[in-house]
Length: 474
Image (cartoon, rainbow, N blue to C red; front, side):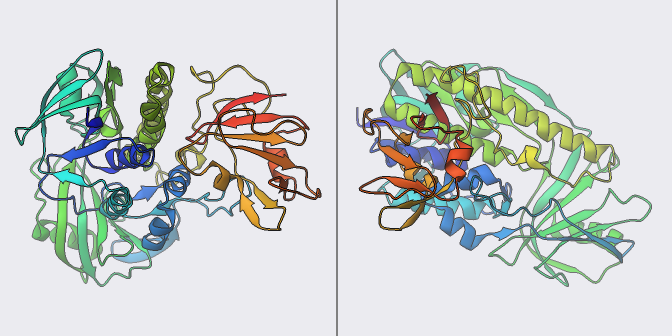
């Protein structure tokens, strides 16, 4: 069997999964029925936990170089400037949380960075190759492609979007709603008269929540625009002249739009697949759950689906593969609730609808009580995100726990006394702050590691390959 895993859909989810597999030397093919790569912003907000995932995948530096922190939003009512506001408060990094703020980068740019990383492993996205059918047995999946090729694979993953062919072929219900009464005009466009160092909101003073937003797309000359559509906008034009007329009606003119890269009328699909797996076939990303754009959760949740599934597919362990659905479906249901609640703030006209808090950052996503997390006590337990912390080695070189976790492996932390290397995974002894390290031992800087892991001498913490605590002993 030349292909171990066949992935349908080369968006952020499929790309992340392909990287996870390729760096573990798993034979993977990534196909997409599209004839060209998507060129637009769509999901442009990268949450703190996704930045941590991207650090592990080796793409964070490129993402930070290409993107931008949040922009202030300048609010204009009836063409007059009234205030400047921020989506969220900027938070300083801490030893445990190195990337506490959202980062903005258009989806097509994020995908380009992920494709480049994937190509470093010798794997390319196969465009214009659709999945037309598949069957499975206890030993593998046989897939028919639009090219006429038949592929034998150990597993198939549907990362093929909200209209997923894979999900439909499996007959999995996509439970939820599509609300035709709530729609939004979205797209990317250039705008003369607007500075690229700020976002903008133009609206009538009589109805301040019904306007047009423009957000700069870092590294490009474009802005992402969004305009809520009322009940009267039943037949919506998505053309450049129609968008210009809509802007002029709320801004008073003076801003010229041009170079419309893409546009669409978005309707809130709020749906969750009844299951994320049937036999050797898995669903991930929008194929398994679709979200309102409020809160910037969709792309990020899909990336983390892939990050959860990749190491489990590579292992081939039945127990690990069985854990994918209960772990990730519970997270997707929770995130859908967050996105929906934020969307309802917009529809209710809540003045704080634009504000975002820690609930959207996905740093608190975890798997306590899941099939891989045993019972425990304390603030940090099995299933929780493993915190970062600064360390120093015997030569005085500074490093971080995240550097120890980086790569396609689990890691064991041994605090103080205890045998290191007693398991099959890399082990590291962490000495208390003020200690003198020798050999491979590492010293906790400032006591942050011991505090974050509630560690006393002899405590052992096993960290999963996806950066979550697997077990805590002593």
